[in-house]
Image (cartoon, rainbow, N blue to C red; front, side, top):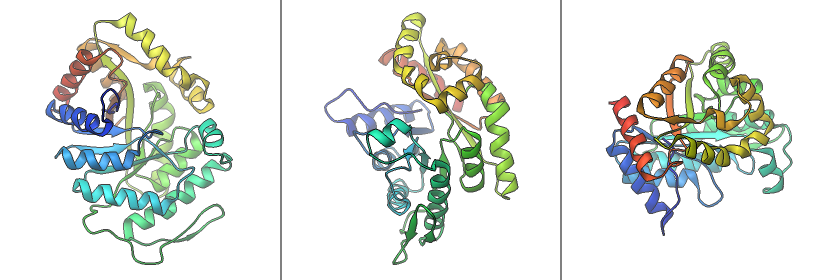
Length: 303
């Protein structure tokens, strides 16, 4: 599940407490979105060290505004801190944030992603990189493998468009689709990703589907909260395309809200569509009691 990091005097303490509660319920992995208030890779490392046994990941750290060697060093550090239970999720990020917040032109995103992954994978796999592309240069002046950072950090990309899926299949370990319904997975994302990996001679990639879902009896009230929380995605062209693939017009239409049977059935639909792993997000939409019910359901499904 995705851990929300809000609500107390110390966000790091909150994240650890919520991850511990998820692990105690039987949840096997927790994920952190990258925000402007905290660093997701660092926080994942702290959580993984404090909560033994749980896998921790990021979904997703934008590649714009970052360098592959620095991200690789962060990832290695969290891998060592967690004893090998860290997963690095990357993404291109929203154009509006890249240009208006970072002041960086959102130019040639697919080429940037390819170069970033090429340099990063070499660094993570060997501790060295000697890459010079059209956009990025990444050369390690000294061997930079980190003791304890094993196995090699898996790299996933929040890729859903055809070109990004092609690069992801060739160079990453899988994808992290969010707000991509079962129809989008089965008809577009899974086939494109699998074909790219097969063409590159790589193992079958993981499809880690992020599903906004919450177990609650307050269905209509929660739907209103879901519409407010997800409305931003309706304005982003890349999400508009995936929503159309999914057969819906608004992101809120993909938020799963209902009792335990309804959410379990939704998870089953995503698995049938090709998801290899399921991560629930927006589990705090209906308050702490509903979050606890959602955790209990996840634990029962993974036991």
